[in-house]
Length: 84
Image 1 (cartoon, one colour):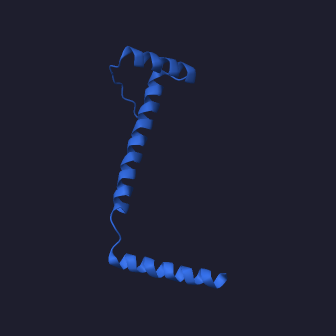
Image 2: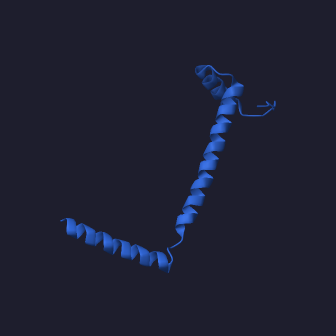
Image 3: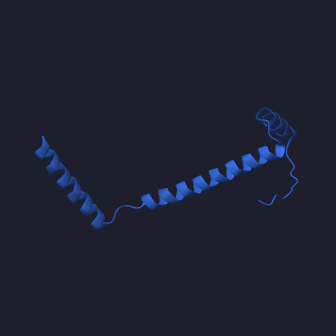
């Protein structure tokens, strides 16, 4: 993996918190920022995936699917009634 140096500006309070966390984790600030950015990117991907999943299930089932569901439920009830 090729590393690229970059400079960022952050508030002193945030910098101090990052410094403390990096020290407690025994990693460099650079590594801490990489970990945080990777976590943020993964979180964003998961949010986008959730939006796509919700969109896929948001639409109502069409008439064919509703008919199939109805028949499946009826068949399921018949099976259960026979077992009892």
